Image 1 (spheres, rainbow, N blue to C red):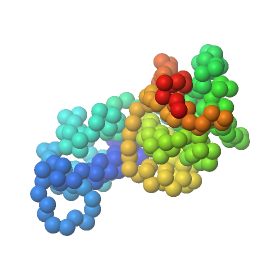
Image 2: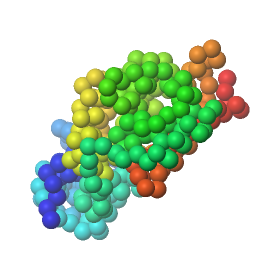
Image 3: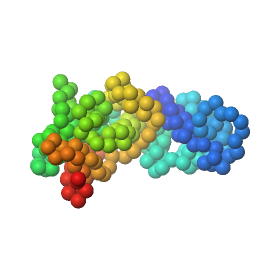
Length: 266
């Protein structure tokens, strides 16, 4: 079966973005005059990967070129991809099953109730496109105006990029926003052609100069736990540790739970 055109375009853009971030010095190639574009030339990357330059050019042109896992592994190695980027590359190449697309995500009643049971810890349940499917009062207080979305469900990505309050609440806004966009890109790669991701990406890039600049960079990142500094009314900057749990029945749905790190809070 040929790959759908949307996936071929995503694959081509991802390969190009990763090729352009590698310098000749990084891979031990000599400088050969002025370069019109950043990073390696296509011919140089093909040489490093041990594949035909013409064949690689077809890949970057979005043609329906078929190749084995070994060829994509060679490309991943030449491009210095980490394990998450490598998995993303294989999904775009059609070498891993992609979940079915859809207009909505089913939400089990017992899963929706979990954030409510975790009070007083801020907790919310988000879907693959960062729609907030369920949240408790502590989360609503911690992320003000998250629920002010009119008739649409609240969406954490829209809140971060399009809600002015987010830049005040999230102390380290730029790295946090970059990471969120990279996670959204990873999820979009699992659902090529899904209109939900296209609509959300279009909305973010239309309304945010940062999203418009960062989205074409094709950074990818898995959903995971970490630490986040948030500005809490009446208390100042508070550091939270947060953990992400993926639902067994709906792996794109994630329960995120915050706990105050009292040892690090200033």
